[in-house]
Length: 60
Image 1: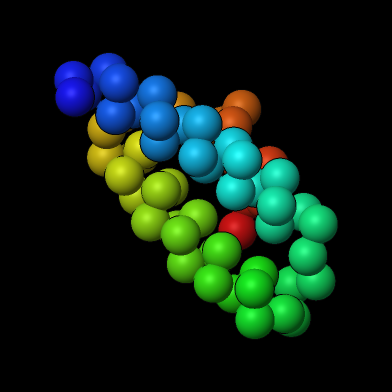
Image 2: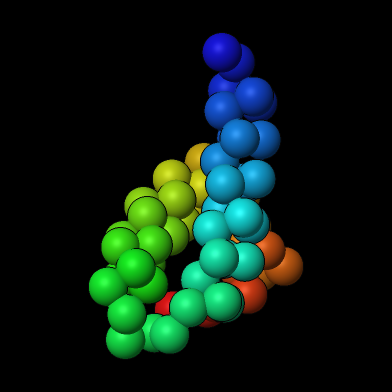
């Protein structure tokens, strides 16, 4: 898998995960688990040079 393909997958997962997070209560266990993955993806994408300004709708 190329770096470009990996970035594409990560951006898609980040976007999809945020959609799921928007449907959950912030106090739920499910939200807390999704938030952990959200943070991981945010770190990966930021370290890869992706500007999250437009992509990050959760902003936590």
